[in-house]
Figure 1 (tube, rainbow, N blue to C red):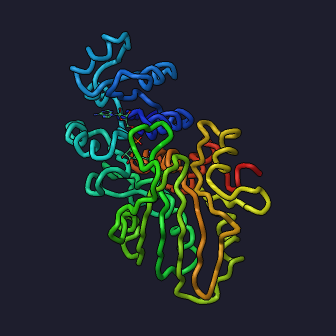
Figure 2 (cartoon, helix red, strand yellow):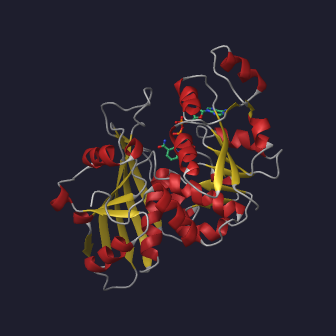
Figure 3 (tube, rainbow, N blue to C red):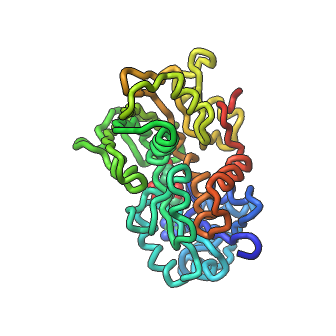
Length: 348
Ligand code: NAD
């Protein structure tokens, strides 16, 4: 590929706006335009940030211009001038948009975790299967919960033989800006029947893994929390072995509760409010004091910032699909340094 990778971001909401900003921080890719469906504050925000604004169809142009918001054209016009489209429209919409994308065979397609796996040739997690996505036509970056689980599983799997994983996911009810979702006063089984779909989603990347997940949804907007139990097929793994691996691991930070006083998501987000744009925490956060090894089983709590954890993976997926960087480590290093990810807890 000559020059920078030209990218369209279709859907400028929680994920899309973060991916667009992250692309801007890279020296090997550019945002040509972002696509908005509604002429609302999000559209004004995109313009204020200097993005070229596009709309899904010709009909939408009038809808925008009547409110005084200038648009640069339609999605199809944008697709003519890009190498990659990152679809960050609401779950299920990406599959419908795919019918449009396939009319532009030169454009590589990246979808998000709200889509079914068959929307793309490969389900993607940078730490697990970057090379599988090299030069493919399409990839689906797995969901926030699955990205968090896979970061831990693939990191541990590089050092120890895993025989099974069991995880309970405590999911946030809505993102902070969302007003129509709940529950607001309940802990709901999500779903009542086990296993939850998260295990199946993990298996789209590591099909051989014995994994069962269960999930509840709780009235909070800040982060998800997982309790994960990992059994090893070889004995002798110690807590110190696990901590040594996690301390060095890419995209994982250990938080010492005893030292920092941080025991939950509100305190994590409070630190991020002071130190990070949009209080984003794209790292997977493992609570160090919860790391417990008994016989051949590891247990721990980890927290996932749902709004930002998949952003580095989207950047890597752009490099993998275009083949501009065949080496996963080089892509991840570039992504992590430009986005300011820490190997150590970002407070220290
Ligand atoms: P969102 O609702 O915040 O943003 C979606 C945006 O797309 C909105 O601005 C909406 O107006 C716009 N849109 C709707 N229809 C459109 C169309 N036809 N063309 C262009 N734009 C359109 O959604 P989100 O939370 O950013 O989720 C996007 C995807 O990312 C989903 O697949 C979701 O499952 C996945 N995801 C979300 C999270 C999260 O926690 N929010 C985390 C990881 C993955």
